[in-house]
Amino acid sequence: MAKPYPYFVSLNEAISLCQETQIKLNSEIIPISESINRIVSTDIRAMVNDPGFDNSAMDGFAVIHSDTTSPPSKLSIIGSLMAGSSDNHKLSSGQAIRIMTGAPIPQGADSIIPIEACTVNGDEVILNQPSKPHFIRKLGENFAKGQIIFSPGEVMSPEKIALCAAAGVAKISVFKKLRIAVISTGDELKSLDQKLEHGQIYESNSYGLAALVSIYGHDATRFPNVVDDLDTLRNTLNKAAENHDCIITSGGVSMGDKDFVRILMEQEGEIKFWRVKMRPGSPPIFGSWNKVPIFGLPGNPVSSHVVFRAIVGKWLTSLTNSADINNRQINAILAEDIKTQEGFTTFRRVELFVEGDVTFARLKGHQGSGNIAGIAMSDGLTIIEPDEMGNKGDVCKIILL
Image (tube, rainbow, N blue to C red):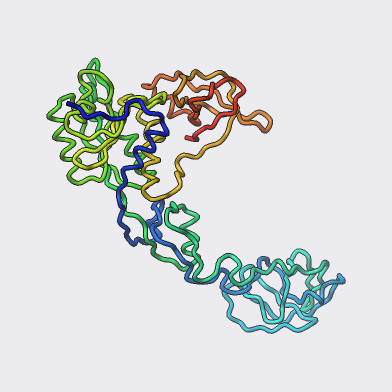
């Protein structure tokens, strides 16, 4: 007999129940060149000051500001400094040194005048305006040696990788990637190398779900399609649980006689909840199989995608206390009424457009949960909360796709 479990929970309850199941992720040291989308596991500290010395922010002349307060000012040019120069120039009143962007500030100089504000005449320069003290980049003004530049949970981006390099950090500690098994179920599914017969469709969910796993910084293993057979499904789940940290299935979670993921979980697995008050995507199941967390997602491709973004992604980020950078949201004004269901969170595919300085959202294509083209060609998904009506003119949160 199946054990009792929460049934038809709210989206927030589903997220909370998932997050009660945690996996401890180990760390590994990797080169920063391999760290895109990886999640920082320990503090990253700068190895150097940035800048490492006072340097010029402009091409121009290094001067003493008090010499330039009553333009035009005529100064003697005593030398030049290029970026990377180690020359030890010393500046006195009445003198100027030609300087390039990034070159170290010579001793005695306290400001820069850009080249376009100067007239050069042989070994003299006429300054046509006062010099600029703030055109000097000061030692350590960006960050100091030993300063924490990133903390655990930060997701590495191209900009963060560049900052690590500027800080002299060649390797960082990141959380090891989870190994996630992705399994699609259904007699009607065929792989892309097979010819379709009447009543059959190409299996697509595992491709989309594996890609979602990847952008969340983890590794997905796509299993061959599983037919609607209890023994075959059991064997596949057992195999997946042997060497994976998590299992994601699609299909077989509704109320039919051949929804074998649900049936098998009821008979032999552990269920934390089944069914969620969300549209689309209400049938998901969550629990564990052989002590491995398992998310049973709906078979309709839009539903599986939405459930991953709404629930699975939040669970993955909770494991590393990281921001959900793949769930960026904006506010938009609904340009039309959107059908909702009382008590349910509503995710509808929309396109965005701007009139004046206001962003609007309108439905994109038909909203059937089997229409993957609709979500692939949309700009975002609405998040209409259970107590909201989705009326034209309402402000609505939009997940950007």
